[in-house]
Amino acid sequence: MSFFLVFLAIVLIGATALIGTDLGAGMLRKKQARTPLERDGFKDGFDEPVASLPPVLLPVDAKPADVDQVRFALGLRGYRMDQVDQVLDDLRDQLAARNAEIESLREQLRACAAEDRT
Image 1 (spheres, rainbow, N blue to C red):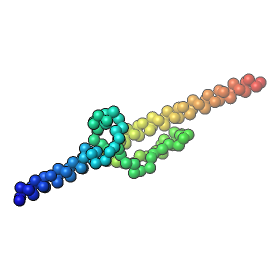
Image 2 (image 1 turned 60 degrees about the vertical axis):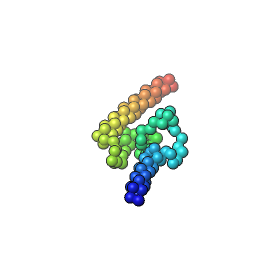
Image 3 (image 1 turned 90 degrees about the horizontal axis):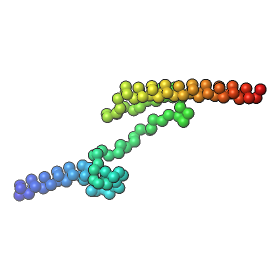
Image 4 (image 1 turned 120 degrees about the horizontal axis):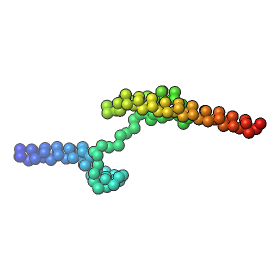
């Protein structure tokens, strides 16, 4: 009798562990493979993250000041803040340089258009 209870406990623990893993979850629900590796049975073991926070977006006509206002949520496995800040600083500087170049080209175009009229 005790051998049967030990066997039953091992089977229940094994079934619980199998269902808790991605392998067992894949057997319970049919999920279409998204990549060729997944179709061949290879997965990275991580599920797609569930979006629980609103996305961080820049306006359509982003200005350098808009980049300064972007803030990301903190997470356990989040990005390193110093790297994100560095990328955002670089993006802000690039936007400022492009805006300055566009404005100077517009001024040149206005000057050429004014010369052609006279």
